[in-house]
Image 1 (cartoon, rainbow, N blue to C red):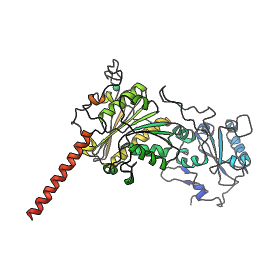
Image 2: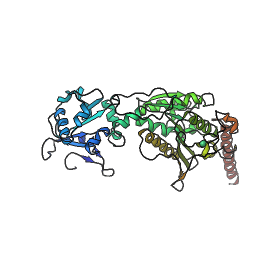
Image 3: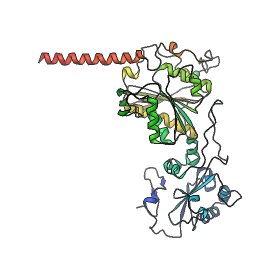
Length: 439
Ligand SMILES: [Zn+2]
């Protein structure tokens, strides 16, 4: 066991506050009663960016007073000029909120953890809105409940997330185009992260051939609308997530209305018409688009931020029909979907949190056969017909016609796949028959 009562993860160096429960404090520490106080990100400027500080005290009030002695101004930051815990602050002892215990008189003992967690309600921690003007009012999250602090504890202990970052995630919404190979891992990870609202655009039903990669759906879901199956899976993972079902094909008639309702748009569409439609709609509505695509053993991911380039800058026109096969025609390695979709979900969370370097301006290429990632720079094209200096596309067009007919899961596309599968079966039957006859 580690000395004292801290468990430090050997690979990450992160101190795990949960470990205190695993190593109860009968272990005698040298010195006086040492209480660990978790300092959330917004207060950390006072503590030299330290995530936890140690302080002595018999109860919460004494401990916080002693933190204030070490870091003058702390108590004022938490309590303001009053002496009671303000409404926008929650204080937890070992993850239990103190108003359910004995308030600031709650007794603490060596090895306990006190966490001081502010809410957004005080207005001191503004959320940067990336949503367009058409976006509905943001979901407001008050103080996290004890259960939420527990559920998201591995986020909250990261300085880059903290309680305020977790609250940003919970106040955000994301629209996922397609509940298929990419949409599945995207939806699962965003749900686990606690994103406030997920919209699912998919009008298809679950087919047995989907289950090789689409982890939102299970064998019992065959025949269900994918968006319904997705909602059930998402809420089984996290009942707090609001799921909106858009069980219709996305078209020029409805895309503005649907996309306007969300902060982040994530593309998992399996056809070019939908890709261009979503791209153009995001451009007109100034929505960040997190784009991913997959085929065979290859994946591509990038991020388009409003006013800084678009899918048409990268690919000005779709390939002629039949030039690039779809996954239904050519296949895709199931696990590849997980890699690409998870990268998309990661990019969404980074954008929400405002941390790191987004994939904006870079196209990440994943070659699963070589097991190599490479990236290329992409930039806004001044000649882009949509976002360039003299745009000719100033409203949504007929994408179905422009892309040569392959819109959504068309019957034509499915027919081709079915024909190909039948040909393969027939060929195999003939071979088997031939072999048997020859023997
Ligand atoms: Zn463009």
